[in-house]
Amino acid sequence: MPPRLIAVAFASLTALPVHAAEPAAPATQALHCGKLFDARSGRVLGEHTVVVRDGRIAEVLPGRVKLADAESIVLSDRTCLPGWTDLHVHLGSESSPQSYSEGFRLDPVDYAYRSVGYAEKTLMAGFTSVRDLGGEVSPHLRDAVNQGLVKGPRIFAAGKSIATTGGHADPTNGYNDRLSHLIGPPGPTEGVINSLDDARQAVRQRYKEGSDVIKITATGGVLSYAKSGDAPQFTVEEVKAIVDTANDYGYKVAAHAHGTEGMKRAILGGVTSIEHGTYMTDEVMRLMKQHGTWYVPTIYAGRFVADKAKIDGYFPAVVRPKAARIGAQIQETAAKAYRNGVKIAFGTDMGVGPHGDNAREFLYMVEAGIPASVALQAATIRAAEVLGVDDQGMLEAGKRADIIAMPGDPVADIDAVLGVDFVMKDGKVYRLPRLD
Image 1 (cartoon, rainbow, N blue to C red):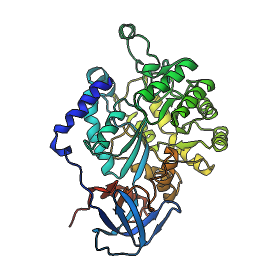
Image 2: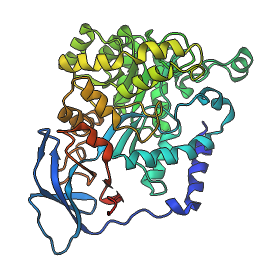
Image 3: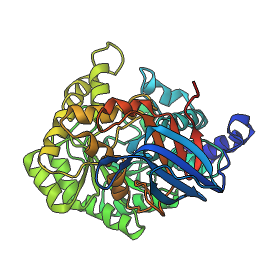
Image 4: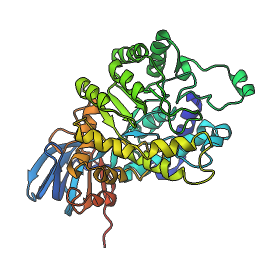
């Protein structure tokens, strides 16, 4: 998608009144929380007052404290948590039976406009940060959010995923011969590599385009128009060339991977995280613990594609058996990884499923045997560790004032995560509870 066209689409959004004005944050706010989730310990504490000044948490005080100079926000019958981070989303798209044909019919501007609504839904569900792992729209959407043109989460954008020829993120998969010959084989500029030099060039191109993180497709994928969902698609040397070049620019590397061999190569090459990890073996888990590699399960996506694979016509014939086979496995893999001490962080692969439904991943994590407190930490303090940032993911003085709240206690009843009705990002309130 040409960046110029996407930029034009976002520039035109300034004419829309609904997005023209961001909420203004008072100088000082006092949030009176009935309960508070401590992301460091994973415990729910009693009543606290969170004092916010200039978009940052100034103090966290026990009890209900009245401040003469502060605007009071009463959340005394709710639990306050750090805003959640979803480490695997695709805000430029959303799965449907038309997804494959739309790539030939829609323009970049169409995807840009769609992403605006997806971003707002994500924020309103309690996700104040996301890592967008693949999509040319995402760096421009990030900039529009940062400029106050669009309501959405803080975005750490990968831009175009890096693949090999015919791999999961090869943009010409499924094209007929005439189109393939007309367009020509994609190369590093388009995120497709076949050598160490290509690998380095592809990372540098992502830097040129303004990415924040690098994403590689270390194995085949479920939804790509290709037969294999798990075959390895990079050599260890290629992964290492990507990681080493990414390190030059301060980037971390996330690896989409379903198959065992591809995961091993990605881990040995030095990636930060394995996404999906469907056929993770004991050997892979040992390597992950040895190298400190994070695991982002994306159980939601697995459940979603496995369900849709049962519907005639939802997926192309080449995709349907992969969706049925791989999708059903991911939750079991997440359970095994947790039992074996692999570091787990939160991600959904949303865009596969409907944006705004991200919190259901918590329910599926708990179903897999992951304690609710650990699942909540995965989307707060652990997600911040994966991103390599130290100013979010906790309700502590000096951190960003990314704060959400909901009725109930999500550690005692994980279903409470579906009831988020207060959202603050950088001290600005985007959602308030409805008054009865």
